[in-house]
Amino acid sequence: MATQSPFSFLEGFLQKLPLPNLQPPSWAVDEVQRRVVLLLNHVLMQESEAMARLARQKGQVMLVQWRAFSFKLVATPAGLLDLAEPVTAPDLVMTVTDESPLALAQAALRGDKPAVRIEGDVQLAAEVNWLTEHVRWDLEEDLARVMGDVPAHTLSQMAQTMTGSLRQFMTKAAAFVPGKSAK
Image (tube, rainbow, N blue to C red; front, side, top):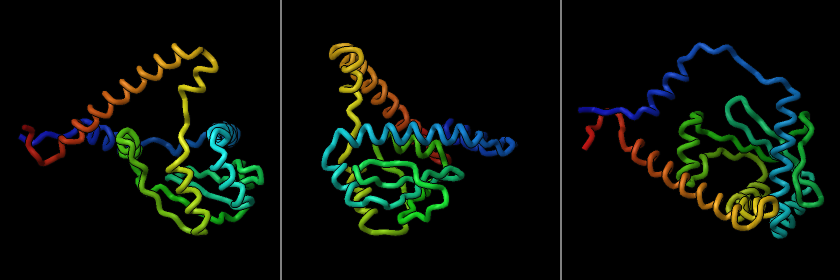
């Protein structure tokens, strides 16, 4: 008996929905991008080597894009990021090649990086790659500043358990490939 993953059905269903081309208002997009820059800078400030590497790339513009979404960032002299002017030509273009939000979520849960097509400045690409490999957000430490060490550690452990369970579920669900029989 051939079994199909419920996720492939859901993804197919969502792609076939006749939704109008809904675009959020430009002010909302701008605000979300500013919040993402604040978060990225918060994480970067916890790693002095990351800031030093990014400072060497000051003025360089990076364009990150996925489907209809794009995000232009510029490296500042302080080793942080800022939103680049929309008319500025990017030095590096990073395009996430996987179109499926579900596939991206599954890869993220597995701890994999998405497939990205990179065009432009090789040195800047190497620095961005170093940042993605070495800089991590210590969410537990940030939570501890707000709520104390023990509650932050408990909450972090709960989140890790939930993520592990979700990862295990997604792995089992992905095993049900269309055309193969269930064991």
